[in-house]
Image 1 (tube, rainbow, N blue to C red):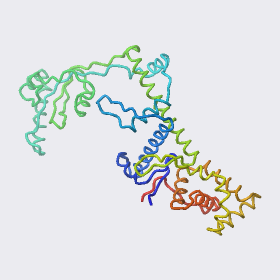
Image 2: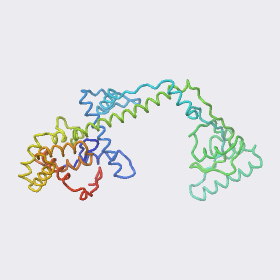
Image 3: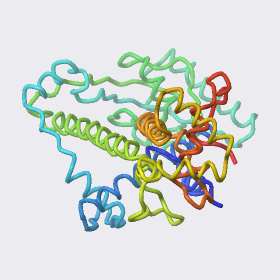
Image 4: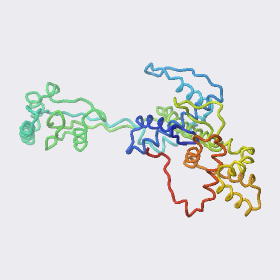
Length: 372
């Protein structure tokens, strides 16, 4: 029998979560499984809603020419149909611009030169000889800085040596990190007094000049700010929408299940609806008398203590469970019904046993995703 878990109000076969987990790199297997369960539940909720809306898949091509899968198209269509956000006003965009002006400027540019000394061998001795060669050049340059261009032409192992070591105008990320950091600490015209190592070799560095970034006018960045605000608002609205679908699924008491191939089951009654069925509550007393006399006597005693008929006591217990149960509670309840001839009656018996157990004895703790 396949083990199942309830996530966001959706019953999911555990093996589907295990398969999905490989697509969610995480710090631990448990975190990966939790992320996988969430992803499967969200996808199922959105596809279920697409089915309710009668939407049909119309796959589109992305900027790289890749076509959406039918599921991706349905999810996009569902969100397009039901998630709306207002476009931010010019005043809102202006407030963002005024509060974060440092973000809306051109990047700092640098003009630099270097002399690269590559190691002749990749062992420690080769790297040390290259370092000493670079240091010897630096010793000369500390006395005669004007020699930089000439040394670059005669000694640099980089093609830039042909132009005196000039690297041209550089933006953030154009150089390896070690070299970029070293240049950031220099003043215009300054030569770094120690060579810097990168994967290419040892660098003798000189900063020619630094061009500070300049503020961009509001009119130039307004559309980009508006797009950013719209995207952020849409993401938040989509998250709220999915949360509402999950809340509805939980309120219905596990609204639907995923089948073995990852699709939601169509037309199956939810366990919540089965539990809330008054006829099932009416049949429970006779069923308990025939199958579990101990439970029957405990339920009758509890009902009598509250001056209630057994069926009324059961209905109230069921309603309380459906209204307050979380995903872990539903997972445990579904496990109790698997293989039962009448899942509704088996579920009622399970939740009644839990309700009649003193709190002091309920010292178990459960996790949403359990290891097998």
